[in-house]
Length: 486
Image (cartoon, rainbow, N blue to C red):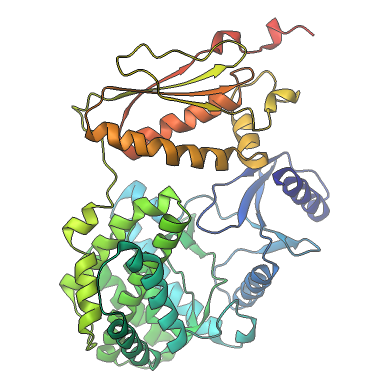
């Protein structure tokens, strides 16, 4: 499937530019099912998006065109395929605001980028609202009572119920109705981005640009501010939150040409902070508990700490005792700790030997006292070594990596492998075992198994801080131009 998509992208690019792309590189996927590619031609690059959900694409394209006409910083659409499943857009680089924050820390430059973001958010919401056809929205046309209840139920079904905490279900539903009724009558309703977080803000040449707003609708503007300032991964300080909230309110007042009721604005803002925190937990629960995506499971502790910090600093003015008690239960230190992946300490005796090998030779033996371990067969994945462009390369080379990630099921294969191996690794760390061996085999031990072993080693180091010994057992026999005969 990936091969066909890449070919379609290549054809669309040629139609748009009149020339072939020199290279097409698949970019890491986020939480959605959309696939992103960067196309290179000399010094020029652009981004291609593949999404089989045509309705979603149409909404994004309409919003982008509308916002661009208002002078809002969004990508420019360059070309759209006839079936509307692929579109090309300007390349805004690879640096999100979150990347910059993580790389530089809470510097003044980073604060100024956040300040630009909240000021331009006000413009997106208010100018973007002017003349926008909300009939073109992807799902709901407005974030009203029904949408708020849906977010709360999303949290209930995909996160809360998965924890098996006892509570009065009927009383909780009554509390949900109270919250939704209180917030659905909020003032200051304009365009609501819906997922305004630092991952959806690109930074290029010290300017900020917005992406992934196709889920937007009419709604309370405070929700987007809450989404950015309380993003769990960003962990902004209370001082930054206060200053950025003030900057945002000033930007809103400038566009309104009048003062806002700040007491009411902030009261409603706190309510939407809570709604957003719970919506995020619901999303993490769905992606983590039900779809078994490790990234989302590992994000749950941060999201719960965020909720805990919020509950300690403020309590929204809802008479919702059952609801509030449930939130207190899930944000205890004990519950948060239960989601933390076990880490190998500096004194952990565990050494994990990860290796690639060729089935033409033999499966590596484990000489440790423990013995055994895992052996995974990669031969069900298409072999890049069968193609002339890759036969003399290995699974460590960029072009082979791109091929395996873009045009095979290697990522699906490895995600399943990670799920199996993680169970044993966590148990071995807890029990102070000293050895585990994980081997990946393919025909020649040069492409698929090498890539898989490299990824497994990276996964174990990043997730568990584990000591890893990585060996490619057939490396001396890898095919090279000088020793190839055919």
